Length: 387
Ligand SMILES: [Fe+2]
Ligand SMILES: [Fe+2]
Image 1: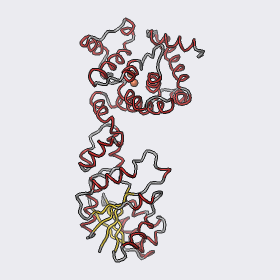
Image 2: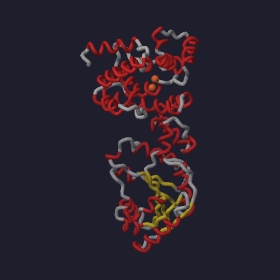
Image 3: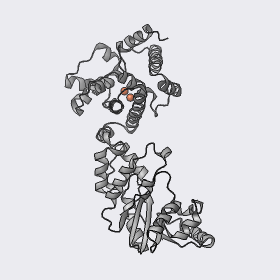
Image 4: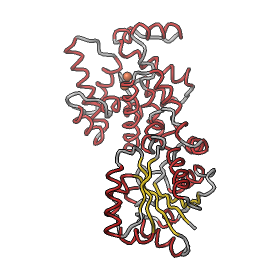
């Protein structure tokens, strides 16, 4: 029996994997293929999808490929996976099989550097699949080298898989882009149901993508990420922080006069002070939009968006987090940003106070109106000893 070996992190498995596997079966004439999700070393686990979820997705992704047998050996074993150990285990379990290992170009070109490469090459033959075809000379050269040095059995195949990667798909989900056509339907459903790769706020992100410029959209993602981090640090609710961060500028696509029209149309009251500080109005309309259009009725989220530009007397923790995150998120690049970024992580109140002081001074210099809410907040902080 010819048994193929098809490993990967599969985080998540996608259509490129499925077509590569089918091609592998066809070209190498394998009777069956073990699809083996790799175990992940504990120190690399941060940000990585759990073994259980990856295994479930692999089961779904290859369910329509009859020759595919999903093998949880490396996941069960845990820790860093060495191909040689998996091969030794397989060879013992199926002594009459001849094994063929699937590799992409990069892996094939570095094969001689793998742990116990010689042993690996004595246990299986290797099928190298190139995506582009332009590295065929390099692959042939490597083939020859492996044959001469280790007596390896190797073959090079050219085929065109779907040009997509797991990294790209994670990025698409994270940023609210439509990823569904790149993964098997059942995998997309699994990701959605489990809220993997940041899918849980996917709908909000899609909405923001439609409403905001690319720059402001990325700013909003940055605020959400920073807000989540600051919430975790300061004992606020990270989920709420993330949502408030995403949505704080949801109506900022409207220009100054459109902001005022929006308020008139929807009966949103504005104070004289609001009208004198026009940049404040998008926070007023944003809070209204979150509540009345998106339908989020969490007062903390609404209020964090409402006061993200001015702050206010008696500002609460989530409001502080959004106020500060807005100023220090990763896409901000004004001269002192690094200073405020560090300070935000070390001491949220101090960062808020210093940022507010700087904003007030800047407005004074420019002769702009300083909103009453900001002045009252500043007063309160100075009364509490901030200098
Ligand atoms: Fe804003
Ligand atoms: Fe903002």
